[in-house]
Length: 337
Image (cartoon, rainbow, N blue to C red; front, side, top):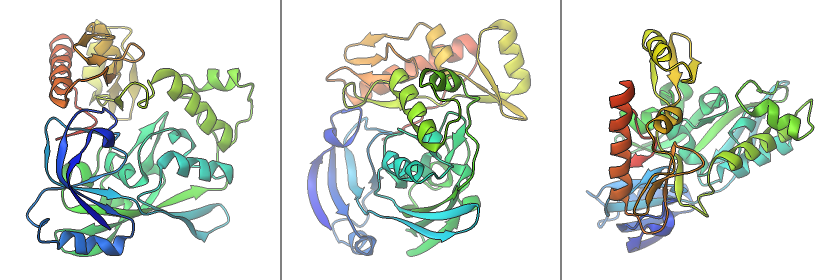
């Protein structure tokens, strides 16, 4: 465990906005966590568990303690004929975990390849991409309950996972600190290729019968083609969620805007936030160094010295214009502080 004070957060968030934190604790072993929380300088301060910094926007300095999760480890807990259960430490890179899984021929998370960040953050956002969500394979979460001051194992149902949402993000954002997750992966599976772009990319790869490795490579190529690399152009990926509306509203919008992409989710429908933002003229827009990517209208970028507040002001303007044109309210994906 290592404690430090007055910490520069610019290198710790992928938007590279300037901000400082009152303090930071690096935790490599979870048995150190309780001593961190009991530290006299830490008590009564806000606490933020920060992984890869790829899903956060700092509008200002953070007045509390940043908790850096750095524990490691991937372990097969139990094997069945068709499935296996894998325990993963929160500090493991998510993309490295996907590579570990597909190289062994396991199915379940291959369509979540090349998502930045650490594994412990995956349930918070219920990460999803290309027709797959974490909720489909998450078995449980091991977390420290700050309210009850004890360790708890939470089932998938107790995590209350929904589209880009969870108990950890929306219901009780300051209560739990995730130490590890358990995934249920499959030895036998079928590739999900019905999402736009996948079949064409597989054809470009000259792959007709993709396994987990080929699917992960396909998704990686798609993400690299559509989204700017945060190491080159600072960003947090998709800045807004695709809004979910009732089917009647979706049908009315499609009548007015026939090209609006709409995805059926059962009783509701999901709209393309990127398409609506682009129709409002925001793609490649810049105000100072706060800008919208020229490659994808869902991605807000920092072209140099933009502050978090400038990025946020741009996001609010985009949100207002989409509501004015379409009557649909956008919600940000990153957590905003």
